[in-house]
Every structure is written in structure tokens, then in C-alpha cells.
Amino acid sequence: MVGVHHRAGRLNLQFAICNLQFAIVLIAYLLSGFFVVRGNETAVVRRFGAVVKNANGEVRLWPSGWHYDCPWPFASVDRVKLNEIRTLSVGNLEQDELSQTGFLKGVDPARQAQFLSGDKNILNVQISVSYRVSDSAIGDFLFAAISPERRLRTLAESVLADAMLHSGVDFVHTLGRNELRELMTSRLQRLAAEQRLGLTVDDVTIGNVTPPLRVKAEFIDVMNARADKETAINQARAYAEQREAEARAIAQRAKDAAEVIRRQSVESAKAESESFSKLIAQLRSDEQSGRRSYAEARQLTLRRKYLDTLEEVLRKVAAKVVLDSGQAIDLTILREQKAGSK
Image 1 (cartoon, rainbow, N blue to C red):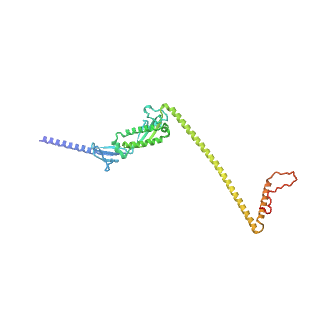
Image 2 (cartoon, helix red, strand yellow):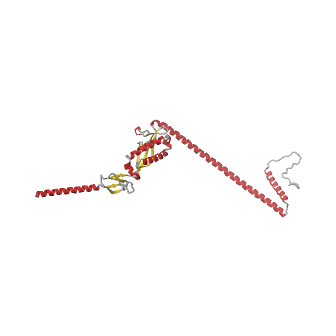
């Protein structure tokens, strides 16, 4: 009997231990449903294979912090960094290497990304695409597309190749890089939205454009010729601006001198007019007072003017006139009017 009780006790103890172990395992399994979302992350939960959505049908985004849902395999958590700016390069040239790569420096042929331009020139082009996961289309990023970043790289290569085919070498190489960047950015944004990649393209940067090694010298000659052309144009513009400024200055000086002469002439004319008006008024006054008639006063005034003018003229005469004839010479300039004449 003692042995039987001892065996029963051992069985009960083992059963209790098994229950305790099962309870611990069950609790640990249930606790595995807790998950942590970091501060720079956003989580999406799939419950029984279906994405958990809000009441309005949109994908529910779990913010940072502690959360609980069904443990695995009934639920799984996908964490995404929405605010992270990601970069992919087309051309397989890293930015740090590009900063050390001078223009026209040889590039490893195995790492070249050659594109054909519209004028049948070959250029090695490297671009960098800055993108991020769209918060409004995170479901497309996680579930609608297979490897969306790889597809975005393929789209960037195709867009770059198409843009190169519709552009000339000068446009891509120097003149239109900003326009090309804006064009590629808008096209990639549109294509990423149409193909539901769940990615938002922020910017496309053209990092480096290099010609093939065989035509390095020709590109250098073209660049030197373009630089000489720009220098000549700038010098011509500077000379034209200088000459234009000088001409404006001369014209302004002539205008100022003419204005001074105009004012002097106007003032002189005004003074003579006022003097003449005062003289006429004086003659009218003498006639009204009865001292002399208007004609006598006028004749007297003309004689005085004549004498003043003759005195002024003779003062400036330095030569003498010698007459060998004994006949009298009439030097009268202003003669008195005869009676009855006007």
C-alpha cells in the first residue's frame, strides 16, 4: 500500500509539473504577441494573413511604442521606416568615388553605365534617386509589388535611357542638366504611382556625366572651344556696355549744356521783352503827359539806341579808314523819317 501511494504521489507531482510547464509555455506564447515599434518606425499587422485595416478601409498604421496582437503564426508584424530618405544609384558609381573622380578621368569599363544620346553620342551617366515609402500607400509597398526598390531602379534606368534618346550630348553634358533632372523626377513620380510601388520619389540627382575614354581629347577640345566662345561673348558684352555707358554720358552732357543754353536764351529773351515793354509804356506815358508826341519820343529813343550801338561798335574797331577822295562820305545808318512818311 505504501508503494502504491508513493507511486500515485509521484504521478500527481509529475502531472502538476507538466501542467505548470504547459502554463508557463502558454503564457510565454501569449506574451509573444507583444511587439515594440521604434520611434522612427511604423508597423503594419497581418492577422490570419489579412492586413488589419481601419474603419474607413485604410491600412492601419501602428505608431511607436508597445502593442499587442495575436501571437505568431496567427499574426505577423511588418515594420517600415516611413521618414527614412533612401537612395539608389544608377550607374554603379558611389558618391564618395564621384567626389574623387575628376572630369574625363578614366572609369572602369565593368562599372560604366553607357547611354546613347539623341545625336548618336555615348555618355557614361550616373544618377541618384532619393525616395521614401509613401505613408498613404504603405500597403502597396508591402504587398502589391514584388521588390519595389528593384522595380524603381529599372524604371530609373528606362527613364534615363529615354531622356537621353530625346536629348543631345551638349544638353545632357552641360546645358540642360537641371531641366533633365526635373523631367526625370516628374516621370519617375508618375510611373511609381501608376505601378503601385508604394514609393514617393523626392528628387533625382545627376551625379556625373563622362565621355568614353576614346573621345576624351575631342571632348576637351569642345569644352575649350565653348569656354573661348563664352569668354569672347562676355568680353564683347562688357565692351558694348562700356561704350553704351560712355555714349549715354556724352549725350547727357550735351543735353545738360543745351538745357543751360536754352535757359540763358529764354531768360535773355524775357529780359529784352520786359525792357521793350517798359520802353513802350514809357513812350505812351510821355505822349499822354503831353511832353512830346509818340512819334517824337520814338524817334528820340531810336537815335539814343543808335548812338549807344555805334559807340559800342566803334569801341571795338581797331582799324582806320583812309579816304583819298575829297568828296564827303555819308556814314549815316539810321535816317530820320521825312514828314508824311510812315
